[in-house]
Image 1 (cartoon, helix red, strand yellow):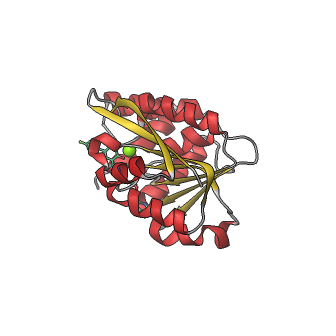
Image 2 (image 1 turned 90 degrees about the horizontal axis):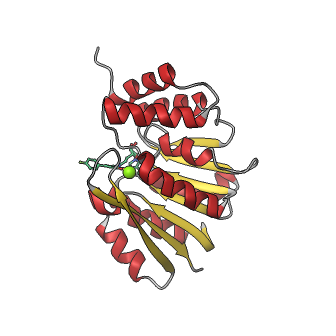
Length: 214
Ligand SMILES: Cc1ncnc2c1ncn2[C@@H]1O[C@H](/C=C/CNC(=O)c2cc(-c3ccc(F)cc3)cc(O)c2O)[C@@H](O)[C@H]1O
Ligand SMILES: [Mg+2]
C-alpha cells in the first residue's frame, strides 16, 4: 500500500537524524523537504524568526495550533526552559501519530503535550484540563480560516494576558486576510510583520507577531 507524505518524512527522520538531538531532526526534515518532497513545515528561514521570538519571550506556557508532523513543535520545544509546557493541537489522527514519533525521536516528549482534537473544542477546556491560566506564547499554523475565530475564542476564554505573544505563520501565502485585518486594526494588539519566504521556496511569505495589550 502507498505510504503517505508524513510517513515518508518520518522515515527520513529515523534514517538521518540522531535520537535525542532536536537540531538533527530539524535538519533531516528540512533536507527531505528541500531535496525530496515539499511539505508544509514552517521551515528553516521562517524557523529562525520563530526561534528568535521564542527566545525573546522565553515562555513557560506555549500553545501551538496545528501540529502536522511536529517540525515547529520540535523547534519550539528545543528552546524552552526546563519546566515549560508546550500544548499542541492536531485533529488528524494520522498526522498526530507521525508527530508523536518525530517529537519522541527528538527526545522532547516530556516538554510536549500533543492533544488530538479540534482547536475550537479544546481551547475552552485548556484551564480545566491542563491547569493553564494564560499562555505566554501561541503559534498559529493550522487551517488559515481558523486563525481569527480561534484568536477571538482565546480572548473570550481568558487565555491571553498582557504581553502574550501570538505568532502566525503564512499570513501572505496561503494568506490569512481576515486575521491580519482584525489583528492589525485592533487596539488590543501591537503587531509586527516579519517578511520571509514560503518554506523551501522563493515565494514571499511572512510571520505576523502580535502582542496582546490586555
Ligand atoms: C481547527 C484545527 N484543529 C486542530 N488541528 C487542525 C485544525 N485545522 C487544521 N489542523 C491541522 O493543522 C495542520 C494544517 C495546517 C494548514 N496549513 C496550511 O494549509 C499551509 C499551507 C501552505 C501552502 C503554501 C503554498 C502552497 F502552494 C501550498 C500550501 C504552507 C503552510 O506553511 C501551511 O501551514 C494539519 O495537520 C491539520 O490536520
Ligand atoms: Mg504554515
